Image 1 (cartoon, helix red, strand yellow):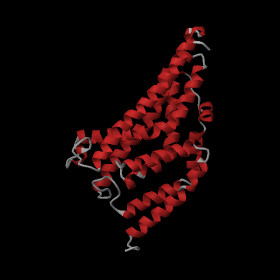
Image 2: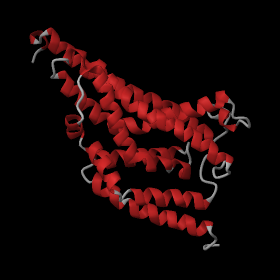
Image 3: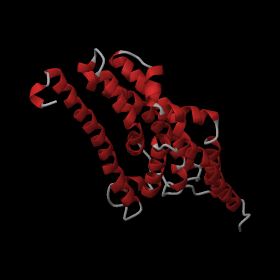
Image 4: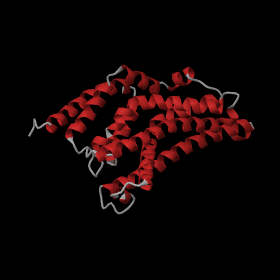
Amino acid sequence: MPASERTPLESLLRRDRWLIGGALAAAIALCWAWIVPMAFDMYGSMTGSAAWMMTATWDFGHLALLFAMWVVMMAGMMLPSAAPAFLLYASVIRRSPEGDRTPAHVYAFAGGYLLVWTVFSLVATVLQRLLAGALLLSPMMDAQDSRFGGALLVAAGVFQFTPFKRACLESCRSPAEFITRHWRAGVAGGFRLGVAHGLFCLGCCWALMMLLFVGGVMNLWWIAALTVFVLLEKLAPFGARGGRFSGLPLVAAGAGFLLRGFGVFG
């Protein structure tokens, strides 16, 4: 339809698409703009954006930075695969009686989703400090003990075959069905819907995110590999089957780590 023939509401709704899509793309880009330089510095001179990680005293300020790092990393890793759900929700709201408030609904949905991963980030921050205190993580924030790394790999591999994993993954792979089944009206309802979607997403991916402790919490290639894997698992046509098949190499790799850790390979 030519721009001159659009009603004011139609023009507003078209702007909403750009506003929501642009905000989502900007959020993902900003997250990676912080992750990438920090990761390079972590495995480089450590005099730049990652210098604070070398502290000998983890006071409140350093713990806050670690928590912020996890929040940004989780947002950067999970938002790409959640984007279809956000955009589909925007499309549903746009066609509803509340269509003139589409951005508010979508931002509430995104806020609920990110709240779940923020809570996970808090747990991961505490867990990282506990693991480092137990000498299970190296100063480079990867598994220092092969037995620990192997156990995480085996656990993640076995989890890929569980009914709980399949149920959560199916919800993530079918956003239309999820939105229909869990629909809540209003902006507050959008927030609750986002929390529900975040919980399903967390249930699907928590074990994979724990593998950051194996390959390195700030290992850029490991972060990118997990991000791509989650993206394919949720969006690719073969994602559901591929996710299950991935359990076998994870278990095999974990067994290798365990055997090496127990001295079987010398």
